[in-house]
Image (cartoon, one colour):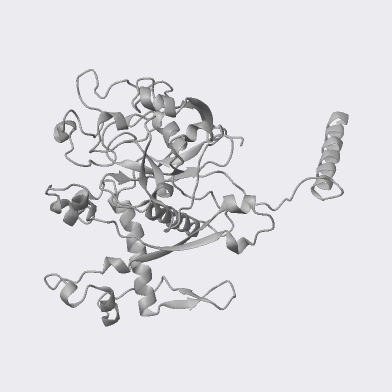
Length: 415
């Protein structure tokens, strides 16, 4: 009985002490009403852990080895789309912009809930696509083909925003408004790139069907320039944030990968292998090609695809990423400089530059990686760098998104 009484007394003392600690009686215990954060697991994305790699072209490329000196860098963990963004995924973005334009044209507005008195779109109202008011959105008169009702894709304009963090960090006492950049951009893919990219070549069927026909829904979207890809990432972040509860904290923003995030992910944890599958060759032991590219002197269909193939074709690398080599080259966030490896930092290296329309073309170069269906095997190496102008659209360039992981590691359940 004495032992029982003693135990009850000890429990009472501990309970009283803990209750006192919950009250902020001079103790440093932090703010207690913070929202909980358990991490996220975005659909269609895979986790790429933090790590260290040596960047630079392989020793077999003597010329570029002298320009791109080998350098050891470290990359923070992130999520990456397991495939390139497909036509149907990008179509969700285009359909959103189309619906937004229709709502505005029909005057579907309600007062904002933030108490500012401003109006916002009422997404609950249904769109009557037969409404006479919406006819102005379609091709009219001589622009109409065979009398079909078709939306004038030039009117599908999206306004997006981004922050110039470099300017904010380097200008003292800067006004916040000066770092918020707003841009408007047409979102419909440039389907004519299939004709423009190849002189004296019959690719009109792809211009007519590649983006719009359901046969190509799961193929990577092309004909999208660098800014369109970034606008898509901004829209995707907005879509994600609206789906969360009001009390749930924001995640990081969807964005294009930096050049070396892309390279680290493409390697799949294999340091010395030049290709994502871990080998030194483009064929396996049976002689089968391992990616979609231009074999030999132009035997395009030998690998199973005359042009692009489905975004999840072939085997993924060790991280679960498909087509990091071949199929379509991919935009990255990074500005291209030949000698970048000589001055970039060794922690999450990246070079950003907001090229203006009036800037020289050399300022508008953005890094693309991975090689494509029309490239030779050299461009499929994970260390090979290439570039394209940010305002151009190509039938062989697509993209995928990344999302920075917040914490030490997705495998660390105590972070």
